Length: 189
Ligand SMILES: O=c1ccn([C@H]2C[C@H](O)[C@@H](COP(=O)(O)O)O2)c(=O)[nH]1
Ligand SMILES: [Zn+2]
Image: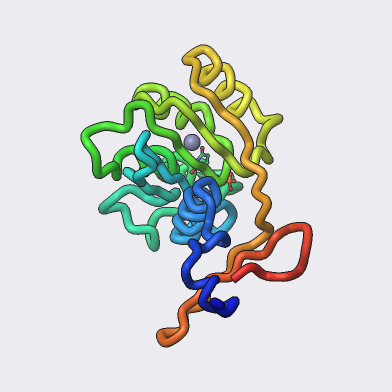
């Protein structure tokens, strides 16, 4: 008779990362590349075959040093604030695409896209937006964004994960990932 270990080895794993968590985690990981001290935003574009075709985060444009351009948001001189210069995560994800186009793709974003990003999403042919935070839902940029997405029939919905956290261990001999469910403090393998 097979031992429980042998049985475990002959069945497929069940604690694998589910697609939505996987793609949203990629967006969150990308966000952590951002140099913006107050808001890091990440975006991950996925095609109909569940392949990642673009990743982006908010950054200064190429050739515009992120040591020299400002990251402030409340300077009296608007030219000393980041807003005129920074490229949004969604724009970068579309421009970074490694496929011919992003038609009918889904974009996973850590923050609901602003109106400017909504225009990019629509014009690029992206059909679905899955977002984590909607913390600016009261702002005109977000209200306008939803108007645009509604008119263009781009579906959007907020992702609520069953996992509360995913921890990555960078141990060269025993690299691992632990997935913690919200309902318990026990980590899955
Ligand atoms: O759709 C969006 C909206 C904003 N961002 C980026 C642009 C900026 O770097 C920050 C916003 O800065 P605040 O300090 O929160 O005003 O977020 C984006 O990438 N995508
Ligand atoms: Zn934007």
